Image 1 (cartoon, helix red, strand yellow):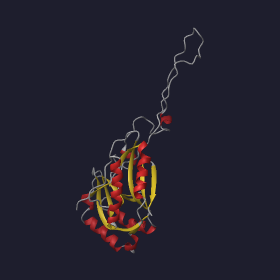
Image 2 (cartoon, helix red, strand yellow):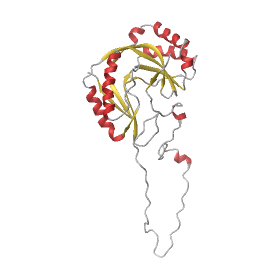
Image 3 (cartoon, helix red, strand yellow):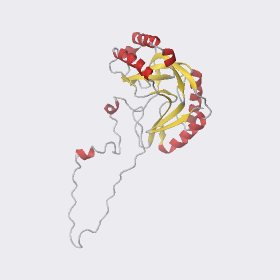
Image 4 (cartoon, one colour):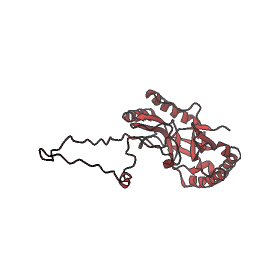
Length: 265
C-alpha cells in the first residue's frame, strides 16, 4: 500500500523580526581638549547573558533536535512566514480514549511514534508568504469561505502517510464520507493560492486526520500487519461510528505564529 503525501509542515514559522542595529557615535566630547582619550576596551559577553536572548542572531539556526527531529521543508528566511490552511478538530475525551488504545499498539511496531499535539485536516500544502502579504491573503480566503455551509464528515479508515521528503511518517484516519465538500473547499483555497502565485493542493488528495507521527520513513513497519490490526481496533471500538462522525465549524489559517479563523455558515 503506497503512502499518500502529507502537507509539508515546517518546524516553525518565520517571524518578521526587527533588526538590533546598535550604532556607535563618532565622539561624545567627554574628554578634555588636547588630551588623548583612553582606549575603549570591549569585554566578551558572558554565555549566561547570551543565553537569555535565544534566536536573536541574524541567521536562524536549524537545529532539528529542538523540535523533535523535524527538518524544515524550506529554508528559514527573515520575513518569510510558513502558512497552512486547515480544518481544526477539537478532540473529545472518547476520541482520546481511542487514541490511547491505537498508539501503544502502533508503538510495538515503531516505538518512536508520538501523539500529535493538535488535530486537523489539511486544505493546503505548507507555503511561504512574505509578511506584508498575510492580511491580503487572509482577506481573500475569508471572501472565498464566506458562502460555505458547515457539514458532517466521517474519518474512520486507518492509513499511513509520509511527507513529500519522506522525512516523517504519520498514522491518520482518512475521510470516507464528506469528500466532495472537502474538494469544494480546496477548490476555493487553490484559487487564492493561484492569486498569490503559491503552490496549490495535491491532485486527488487523501483528506485525513493525523493521529501520531515519527521521524523517518516507517511505512515498511506500519503497513501490512500493523495497519490491519489498527483498523480492527477502530472497527471494534465502542460507538466508533458516532465518534468518528465529525462536524466542520471553521476553516483556519496559520501563518508563522498568527492564527486566523473563518467560521462556516
